[in-house]
Image (cartoon, rainbow, N blue to C red; front, side, top):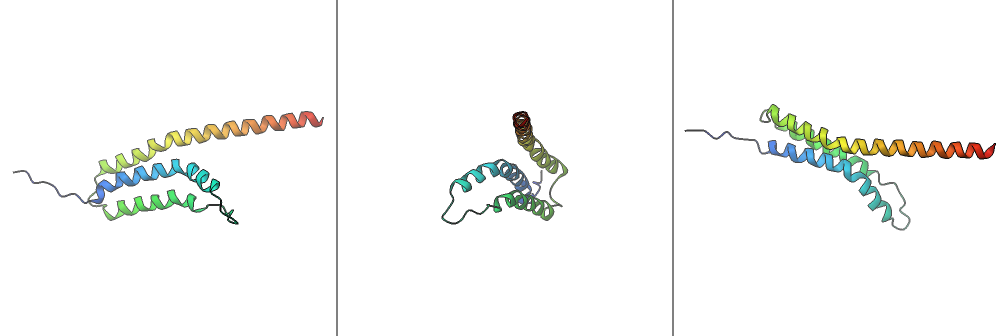
Length: 118
């Protein structure tokens, strides 16, 4: 008779924590837009708590892995790291492209302003 192996409940939570970590990176610009457009009277402060969301979720992911380190298999950790790695590649590509476009536009503006001053 086959014995069913017991699995620590948080071994499945590492996948959810990894997905939440990736989603938090994508939601930062949206949260900035939402909180920036909903300014209250006299409260024009920078919503710095938004920058802490990925850090907190990363710490939650680390806590889950450390508490269940004996029960999590190597394959599960590899899948978790692949979710984070491949989930963040489009995020990095998009913002790198936006940076290049922004810097190029600024350089063109600066060149035009220098030509007008001469």
